[in-house]
Image (cartoon, rainbow, N blue to C red; front, side, top):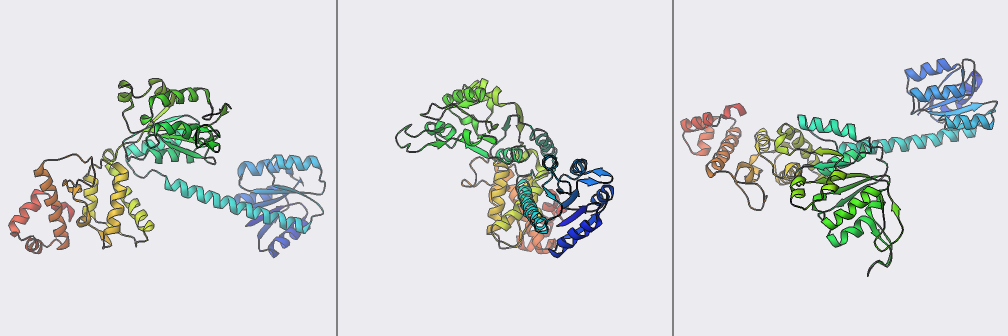
Length: 450
């Protein structure tokens, strides 16, 4: 920690400086405000001792000026003419403490040590928040991800309600949490309700809570998610799966901001920011009378769409790199790499399960591979067009000829790579003629992988 003393009495500056240096704190001093302010602009200080009466600046005005340029700097006011009015005014404008002259050496050391604890806690909290924010940052360089980032940066600091759409696995919850972390509500709770995972008969109790004796087994009061989200963010995931009867109750509560617990009469208000999400085509759901149109208009204040992975293939190499590092770290494995050929397979695959599927496949391959460089030999066959029933239920289908060609291309490429692109050696491994292998290389345009 570094401390600056600004006082027109040099002896006081030297005394405080000596005390602080005995406690292993770095310190410097200035006998005018302007000299001290220049030092603040040229170096980094954590704490400033500032005299109330200076020849070139009133100390109270000095607090305002320092805080306007260096809001993170803590200020301790010192004065030989201390009074309650000065002390109150100093604290009002951002001073941490007010110490009267003659100065108590113990009071000075105690104030600095308290500030050291405070600053360390603030640093740890900031570091924690940055780490959490980094965890939920959107990875990629595509235009779709860039546009999404811009939109999030614009809407996150507001209190506007948000409606997120996108296929399964695109990262809708990820986006919701990022918006919360960038909002003014980040110090309060992010409360999630998965509308597709909770049975309809339990959903009302989950959302609004219940009072003791509301039903058999309700031996204690339960606080609902709406109440827990007060001053924070409420995330209704898969809202398109909510039962119509609950949609009507939800709409009424969203319009009034008030509700009662199940079995209770007390009216409860909750100031939450609502973020909803669905993987369904909500307009079709409305047309099929599965979703209330008035509820849709109520929650759809700011629409946000998360594009499927097949529409942003430029992001796949960056996602692969991130998931490889994450999988190695989580599983205690030395850092591995993905072979360029396998990366090409990843880029060309449509990923019906989107980012979630890509992440899971990478972790599976990282864990099962015995090599530092993970190649196509460890890849699930459905990536080459050959469907494995248990790997993914929604992979679609392609013609048999195309599937065979995909697999042949990747297999020949891998053999060529293993043979160091020695065509004779590769032909021998493949048990085919060199001329035939050359034809295959030209047919599949494999030279670009050299």
